[in-house]
Amino acid sequence: MSQKAYKKHLKITWSKPYEKSSEGAITSVVEDIKVTFIKGGTLLMPQEDVEVLTSFRYDHNGKSKTAIRKVYGDEVSVYQKMVKDYGSNEREMFMKKFAHAKAKFNYEYGEIFKRASSNRFFDEIYNQGMNPEKFKKQTNVDGSVLFREIKGDRKLSLDKAIEYAKQLKCDPVDLLFEKQMCSLWGQVDLFGMNTLDEDYFPGQIMPNKEEMVECPRDIFRAGITAIRINSIGSHLHGHYAYYYKKDVADNSLNDRLCVVGTVHDDFEQYGLNTHRYWFGIFKVEKGVQKLINPEPEAEKKVLITGPFDFVAPVAAVVRPSAMKRDYDYYESMNAAKELFVHQAKLQEMNFKLSQMLREQKYKEEIKSDYFQKEKSKIEQQAIKEMENKLLKYIQDIKKENDKIPEHLKKKLAWVENQKINML
Image 1 (tube, rainbow, N blue to C red):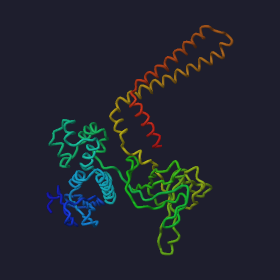
Image 2: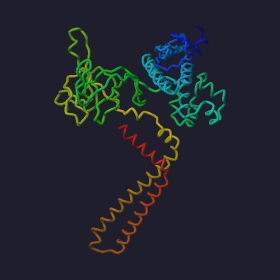
Image 3: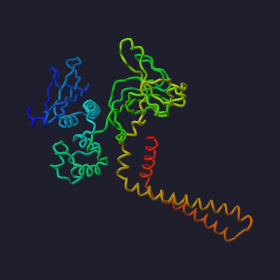
Image 4: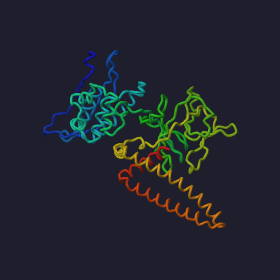
């Protein structure tokens, strides 16, 4: 295949076609979707091809049968074709599987900072309930340019990404770069014992089927991985713990959340050096390494005692929903300028109020100490004036707060909750 042919191509075949039926029209439903990324192209022009196998279940003369369609081609052509072809439920299934397959492919091939394909732009347009034609009218952008950008024939520039992001109420980074992803390989229960292939104690990490999850950009670096805290009743339940892999036991990580490893002696006779993994607060007491349960309500306080083969620091514990962009996010982005103006004004007024309260407290001290002796009418009047001034200023703050529209008040509360949830 020539370099030019690799630029855009799409091939649709049936590895298992429908069988002809004597009953006329065939009704089918999507049973399964498999997405596979394939390294292709040439050395000078590498190409990421995608294969999508869709299994359709249908009734054939009273018997359940399966047909399989294969769609193969470049990433953009395949993705946009499938999104348009599938119904809403199948489309959601496909998009999740496509995102996971792509993240795993990039992870395995070491694609750390990867430029986003035009599919990210395509998705954001549809996320806003628009199609390319409506978006063209909203932005007044040249139609031929826009459609080339959506098809991936023309890369988005930084200026264009910023311009489009304002219309789409998203972060320009979402249009320019793929999300940072990492492997989530295990889960941990901080309360009780679990039995899978073997017994897993509280705090011991149980391996599960590997999946790719989003990693916050500010903590991402090569070698980061994650586990899920699956401990109902714990304040950490449902959170992801991201940690940096290490192969040494560093005592300087004292009092920090860590993932530690102990040698699995059961396999030593076979010459295998395997590990058991644990999650908790690493502590060194009188030269002894310990792992403390981060859940204060758990019965088992000390999860395991060292020495540990390695100690890896946890970079962050994050609730997955805190990384998702929901309706409130887009609405707050749309009202950001107005929101920040109100926030700045209220902050300034609250600072001035604190100064007035300090002054009032000082006056009250004078009142209790000096006026009991001197009964000064002048100072008494000064305190009265200060009290009136303070009451009026508090009323002004309430009036200013009442000026904020209700939808912005909700955004203010939502923003503060996100800050708290990220701690």
